[in-house]
Amino acid sequence: MILKIFLIGFVGAASTAFAEVPQPQVNQEDLTVDRFGCQILQRPEHLTFTTFRDAWRSIAADKLYDIHRYGTSLKDQSCDCATLRPDWSVIEDDYQSLGFAAGESSTYNEWVDIDYFPVISGLRDAVQNLCGGIE
Image (cartoon, rainbow, N blue to C red):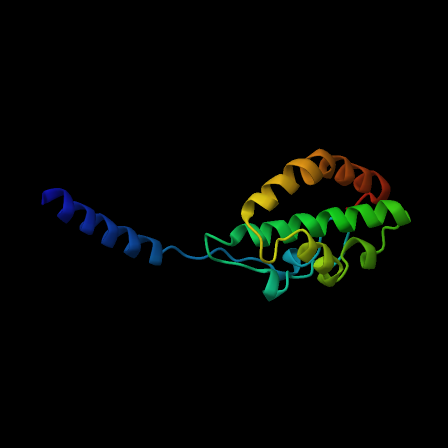
């Protein structure tokens, strides 16, 4: 009983304390441009999942988008923003065919182990070497 009263008091005090914490001021311009000077496009709503059970789908979309944009940049030897930050629609077919839209997270786990982790670091480094970045 005493533990229950303590926990209720603690939760109440913590929620009050967090409610009073001032929010940091963030410059919105800093959040919209990547290290190459390209505008960061927001992930479309239909590829954004907020529930615990489906959050992996958003991460899968992000990873697929990165593989595509870095791979295209290297293939085309291009550092323009249309290549480095293409419209998200470029991943739609792959997202569907890999089963991320309706499949199980095990499909994603297998894909990320076989097709993402072994190559993403090399792709990022190669694009960095090709394109440099803004100073």
